[in-house]
Image 1 (tube, helix red, strand yellow):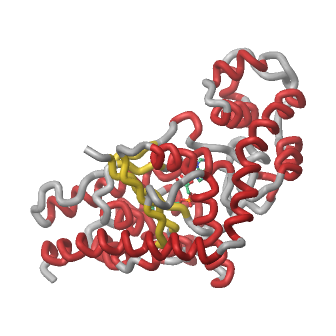
Image 2 (spheres, rainbow, N blue to C red):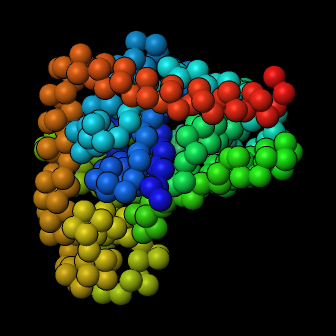
Length: 333
Ligand code: TYM
C-alpha cells in the first residue's frame, strides 16, 4: 500500500536550517520514493494565529513554495498547495473543535510557550491551532506525517481527535490515526546563540539561525559567531550531554554528511572549534547555498509559483471536498 504523506510549513518568513533538517529534507526524500503519495501544504491559516502583515504574508507564501521546490520537492510528483484556498480545512477544523476537549488543548506546551505569560491576550486561533492541524492531516487519510520534534504533541492530539470522532459517531476507522515521522537525532536543531533554545523563525537575533536564503558569507559569518564552549571537541558522545552548543553543531555536521554522531566525534575529537567550524561551514554552504540561489531565481518567476499553487489547490480541493461530504453525512448535516 502507498504511504500517504502530509505535512505543513507556516509561511512566516525566515525558514531556517532547523526547518530544513527537521522537516523539509525529509519531505524531499519522501517525495523521491515512488511508493509515497505526498502532499505539502503552505499553512497560511496557521500563520495568522499571530498577527501578520498581509503584504508580507503573501510574499512569504511564495517564498515557502520556492523553498520547497528549491530544496528538491518536485511539484509534478508531490502536491504543493495553500491551506486557505481549500475551505475544507477551516470547516473541518470547526467540526473537530467540537470533538476535541479543552483538557487536551490545555496540555499543549507550544501554546504555553507562544502565549507566554499573558495567556489572556493570545488569540483563540493560537489556542485551537492543533485542531486545525488535525483537520489538515485527517482530510487526506494521511498515514505518515514528517515533522520536527516540536510537533510531536500536536500529532498525538490529532490521533486522539481521530479516535474520539470515530467512537462518538460509531464510524470505525473513518479517520486514520497518522504516524509521526521524526528523525530522532536531528529533529531539534538549536539556536546558535543558546544551545538550550530551539532554532526559530521568530528569535530576534538573525545570528541565532541560518536562513535558507542566506548567502555564502552570511553562513560562514554565522557559524564563526555561533556560541560554543572553551573546551576542545569531545571524544565521547556522553560528554555532549553537558555541552548543548557542541552537541548542536556536531549534530548539524552529522546530519549534512549523513554520518552518525560517533563518526563525527571520532573525526574531530580533541580538535578545537575553529577547525571544526571551518569544516562545518563547508558542508552547510555546500548544502544551503544552491538552495538559496535557487529560491532567489524562482522568486523572479511568480507565474511559475502561482501555477504550482493553482494545480496543487485543485488537487487538494478534489480530495478534501469528498472527505467533507462524508463528514457531513456522518455528523448529520
Ligand atoms: P513550522 O512552520 O513551525 O515548522 C515547519 C517544520 O519545521 C520543523 N521545525 C524544526 N525541526 C527541527 N529543529 C527546529 N529548530 C525546528 N523548527 C521547526 C517543525 O517541526 C515542522 O515540521 N504546526 C506546524 C505546521 C503544520 C503541520 C500541519 C505540520 C500545520 N499543519 C499538518 C504537519 C502536519 C508548524 O507550525 O510548523
